[in-house]
Length: 261
Image 1 (spheres, helix red, strand yellow):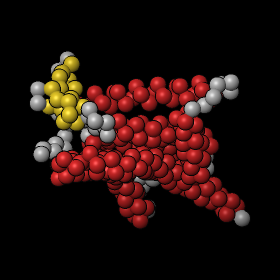
Image 2 (cartoon, rainbow, N blue to C red):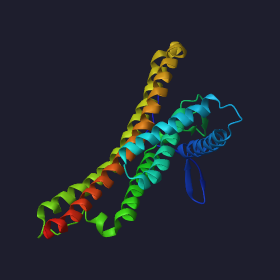
Image 3 (cartoon, helix red, strand yellow):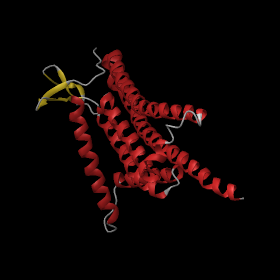
Image 4 (cartoon, rainbow, N blue to C red):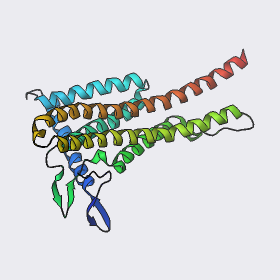
């Protein structure tokens, strides 16, 4: 039994190594895009009967968008964050589910290397998704409150406001910790699920076909939970950033009124 925690290169394109996780990641991306386009067309057409997967996608989208509006009261920011966060939910869920297919992993090999590997069990992918989420949050903060207003959360005059300087330093550390939390949490949970399936199949031997279905059902449930947690953290981090900025702006706007009084 051999368990690898890193993706392995299959071939190269212009010197860029293409790993087995990238191949499945591209396939998952195409599946998500095709499915969501199909769902969007069916949702607009009232003459056609909506299937189970169409209704499921619509139900998920409505619930996730409602959650986003509850966390982010600013409608303009919510309309930008929600499509991105919801797309991440569907993408992560689909990647998690397709890696449970029997031809993913050691079942199909090329030159002794697994041809396909679960993308969300690759730290580079989860780290890239976390970077995109944090960058989008920062962009929205810059657009809404300006460069000076957003950077004022992290950098303050240590002579005029030493406590605020320490607070800004801690806020800067929290941004880095959010990046690590988003990437490492998803990577660790997905990798643990893969290891669980391998260990159960190896230990049970001939009776594994009778036991593995229960493990797969459990993993299907966990996949939806992991996708939702990543979505929730992205939305919550966005709401926290906006709420902090709005609170500071409110205090500043009330200051002149008190001075006039």
